[in-house]
Image (tube, rainbow, N blue to C red; front, side, top):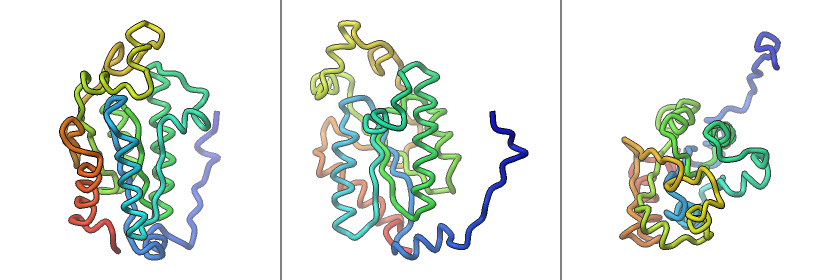
Amino acid sequence: MNNPKNIFQHHFIVTKKARQTLHKHKSCILWFTGLSGSGKSTIANAVESKLHDLNISTYILDGDNLRKGLNQDLGFSVEDRKENIRRAGEIAKLFVDCGIIVLATFISPYRSDRETVRSKVDKDELIEIYVDCTLENCEARDPKGLYKKARKGEIKDFTGVSSPYETPVNPEIVLDSNQCSVEECARQVIDFLKNNDYLSV
């Protein structure tokens, strides 16, 4: 275990503000949360494409992708889910410090975990995006076949089936993927960023 008394934070010449100036836009976390199959990754992909066309520096942190690498040692217990989001939050914070807009797509079922990520960055640097989709619609889509496995008992602690999802209380953006197309959802995110001056310094 590290002894905090023996760890010292270094302060460097190039600051977050300087990096934002270099990229010519602010940096922030677009945190997409919602049930599996709600459309988080698909919408984030569309948003990133639109931001790229606007010459905005971005990166997507996807839950499944991180579990194939950095977080491959984690399962889906409450404790492992919390650690999964803690690590993702720390990585997202680094991207914000780099002056980049990071799109994070995680079910992140617990409000306390999402708020912990918010507390790691400055005010207005985390934009919580709730991809609102009913369990019935998510299960009907079931793009990865996970709900079917969960209903058979082949997957334990599956959010929405055998594990809870805590709906955001005051998200900055709510995307209704029950009714809206991917294009409409992506445009809603871009409009929010433009209207709140995130795309310039």
